[in-house]
Length: 162
Image (cartoon, rainbow, N blue to C red; front, side, top):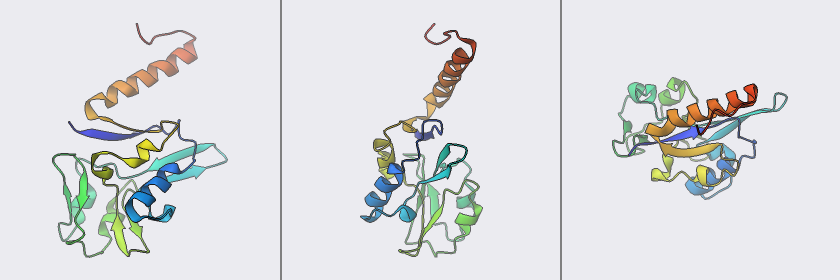
């Protein structure tokens, strides 16, 4: 069953534990610049947004890679990066409309979220629940439920669980 890493920016506190957990898992060091997820902060607005690879169905990064180093994993539904084929041209970084591809300057290579082989560590360390790894089929249900909760708060009525 294909799963999706769902980001709920309204729950993100900007703690950046997801960045720390990711960098430690992939590099052995706590260095946010080497993480595959990055929290973009707008402190004046009180807005935090975790940014990572969206595992696009029609991924621009795959389309531009001249060496076919990027491909779709049919089991997990993720975009994978084969470092043996990658020549480091960084065309995938420029092609990604979401900033999901990154550059690890210390390792001198392109990096991207690999969903931790089906168990994203960022989700495990996200105490506020801003990151969830859920079945793709239930994403719309979660969004509809959240919209119903927001509507009930505005209207002062309970539309959920009826």
